[in-house]
Image (tube, rainbow, N blue to C red; front, side, top):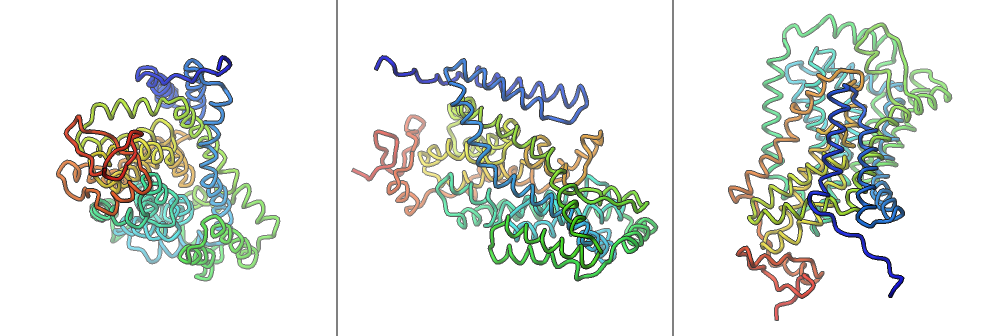
Amino acid sequence: MADDKPQPRAPSLGLALVPVLLTLLILALQLFYFGDFTPHIPLAIGLAITGIVGIYLGHEWPSLENGVFRVINVSLPSVSVLIVVGMIIGVWIASGTVPTLIYYGLVILSPSIFLAASMVMCAVVSVSLGTSWGTVGTVGLALMGIGAGFDVPVYWTAGAVVSGAFFGDKISPLSDTTNLAPAVTAQNVFDHIRNMMPTTIPAMLIALAIYVWAGYSLVDGDGAAFERIDAITSALQENFLISPWLLVPAALVIALAVAKKPPIPSLFAGVVVGGLTAMLAQGATLDNVFSYANSGYSIDTGVEEIDSLLNRGGIQSMMWTISLILIALGFGGALERTGCLQAIIEAILEKVHSFAGVQTAAIATSTATNLVAGDPYLSIALPGRMYAPVYRGMGYSTLNLSRGIEEGGTLMSPLIPWNAGGAFVISALGLGIGDGNLQNLLYIPLAFACWITPIIGISYAWFGIFSPKADEAEQKDWIDNERQVADLSAYGYDAPVSIGRSGQAAPAE
């Protein structure tokens, strides 16, 4: 028909790279030239550049806007978790829960094994809660206080916390990303978790060994800052009632998680019980509790380590992170809607024709999407959709893909400061990057478990181990559900199932 609107054009690889490269250039200018660690405006400019590219390609603004808000909408449950975690931090400090954790940690934990114990503790809690963010904001914050008492560098403690928290999130059946990865690759979540064990266990053991070694190297276990520890524990006792009963809010949240209750109501239950505990045990008023939940806790003990850790929390403390996440997600949504990300991935697929190459490309693409779009969800969903037909065309199980995008998506997220995960870590742990404490970015290479895992996964692909082929049951699923299968016969691959005209798996003729 004459009034039919023309369809938007697909971008060339060169054009698709324009918004990505320009945004990275502006980010570099802001971070390294101006020395200002606030990536919000560069990402907002990147969104605008992507919108201009989209309009040039024939997209109308309502379509681009819909793409931006669609991705933001997908992330709203995680933003909700951030809001509740902000409330928990403020209220649990006021209730004495976090001070009690810090106090007993300083009294009970051995300084030499502190880093290793921190990683294991965060992993266990994260598996139970199904949220790395909730773990970082609660147990992780307490561990930062314990580390300060032991005179362990902030970035070492943060690295151990991130390693454990995000690793636990990666293998928890309660985690949203652990469910998203098998969902986009048409796999069962428990098969997905089992298939991640060959990379998960070695990486955790390597990281554990490094943290044990670092603990004995960094800390003098016989006389580790005893004056500092005494000053912190004394100040905590002077300003808070310290008792094992004050751990009830944390125990309740973990119990609800173990009972497989939804994360947000479980965390909010922790806010309510924490508020009641603050009033009953610490003498706070209801008005105080509301203030702590919204604006955070404030105290002046005269001990710098305590004040820097306990003056935080509240919904408002999360607004910097939430605003960054929303802008980064909008940028990612615009890149997806304009086809820029798809053009880049398709260019990669044209050059890679071996299973090892495809597995490496899938992990690298998830990591790059995390880097550019700032969104762990998009970094899992987009490569998962794009690469799945290629794995099927090669005859390999998409369990390889779900593991790869989880490693490049979930585990790389906290290592990118302007990513949703990285921004939250920096804010919740009080790393002070925006205040010029750039040395605390050393937590990134020190989060060993996060970056060792994808290296192990890539190595497996090149050595041809722990890389399952599609079995008969999986091939039947392809046919029954008409999954997309790439025709790779030109590269020497015979698909294990027949491929119909539309590229979907079809019954053998």
